[in-house]
Image (cartoon, rainbow, N blue to C red; front, side):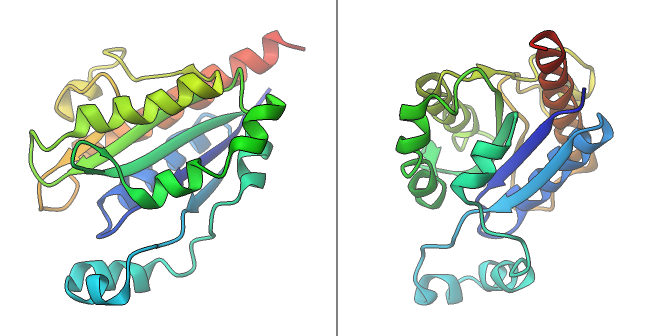
Length: 200
């Protein structure tokens, strides 16, 4: 029994986008059907244009489909990603999450595996607190949180974050971190498939 996994993220300059793609690849490797979706950009053009890397990423990802509530209703499992903003998730992803009240009231988000991933400018820039803040939402949804933990050595290669794969720094996302993100997506899809098999 294969799972349907929604990978939904916000990325300003592309690091979280790279992580999201890797998570999606890992889920697909585990046999899942995957929807890779980005949330809408809310920042004004003046802010985006002040950072060439931000503008470049906005233009480069125009063809990535925008996340909708239907993607959450469709999915058996979720992977949500955000850059850290003062130790919290970005407003763009938060705005999308804040539209899920109807699905939450219906119980449509409950009992589904979920995981998170993030990126910060420096090693102590809030990655862990951002992931844990994202997990607060999963608790309210009634999700089954599927963190990578220390269940595979690749987690250590990416810095050893048991809460979720995280990139730190202004350089490109390392291959070790992408490997960990793929593992996180594979783990999510595998556990989702097991739960589906047990419920039928």
